[in-house]
Length: 233
Length: 355
Image (cartoon, rainbow over all chains, first blue to last red; front, side, top):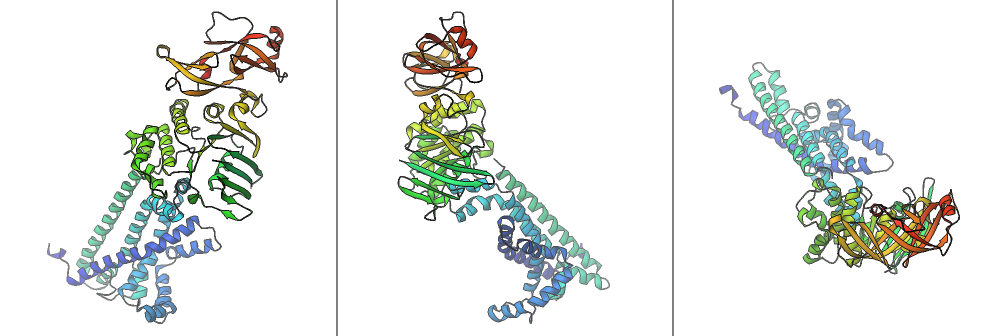
């Protein structure tokens, strides 16, 4: 089983991928929740434009998304320059950039999942909570949020899985630097580009499959648990 | 306690323009489905913001469109029991009951909780999930949840409409206890004469978004067809439970000088209750009939007769201090030669007095 042993460089890629996916998932969650609330409940001008923007990364070729990120968040990009100067937050050619690219790519999936669960909430329950004295913020925390939890969990796992597999936008935006931006997918790609890299590609591919399967099963389990908790009255 | 409501509101082509007052106790908003009762009660609750109007409780102005004043739902402290119980599916019965207590300014005591649970008979359900309860149990929990939020006013929107007859009969006694044991004024929306007759002290008849009549329950419900649908006309008789005939599953009610036998009710002797006797369920005989299955044969004298309408006549009879309305055909009236002052027997089947 010698060929199964991972080299240090390969371990680094696995750890980096997990970190990038986790950060991408957690940092996009609050924004996705707001966007989903706005799309599900909001009645404002420009709602369909917001809807289009949110879904953009799903439709565009990932290379285009990566290129747009490069233009906006690169060192000399308008947003990138501002963030670097004021907050010391640099995205280009850093693992943070990989996380940003993954967050953007997973965003539509997360928003969609949360939005569907918000639309499924019986608003009459929220009215009932209000008549019992709960202010809108409390209604959200004690009624809406618990009821949409399955949707949030499903959205988080979709976003995480998407981040684990993200390749095109990441490599376009932050390149493929071992130890900094070389995620699992990028490392597999690199192995396939050199002679004799098949074994390494196989090892990482197996790890990728295991992680994806685990994420999927976890999501099924959590969804089932949540469904048991909130069977409609 | 006094509640004053006046409001105007347009929903599409339907217009509500209604005003009513309540002086405590149970006030019923009574009318057909689609008459605007639910919209009216939603306006009182604050769930619906009317185009114009005022809601005043005990001199405290809750909403007034002229002064641009609108207290949001959660600050009104009006309990609301909906037609579908609307229990929170993710919380146990206990947590559903306690929900309003988090927000009630005066933290309610554990003894209050125990009292309400006991009054509604839901002690065995506390650890269960709403999805495992029957319709009647859910509705009782919903009533408890509203009560424990320490409401200043309790609104009930057809709380029994979604239940079958057996479940209704199961809950009505609890609602009567609620009326008699708490001091909270109740606005009760219903389209059922039987429910209104049994629970309400005052009745406001709503028709097509407007108030058609209002007043004491006995007066409104006995009024010949003015306020009610003609087929619903009847009389309201106040009585006291005299005793039970356990062998035959009957309850005997004393009303004035009459004893009226009705299907068995779970109530203690001495309990006051009101019976609604629909005019179409009452027969008249000029001689005391024999060999008849009907259990209630009440001697009385005719007070007056209405004009014939669609071939039938409403006859009002004084039976030992109770006014009972009988609807008979004009033909029967002619054949029997009925006229005011004539002694007759009113015959009422016991099974017709089921709630």
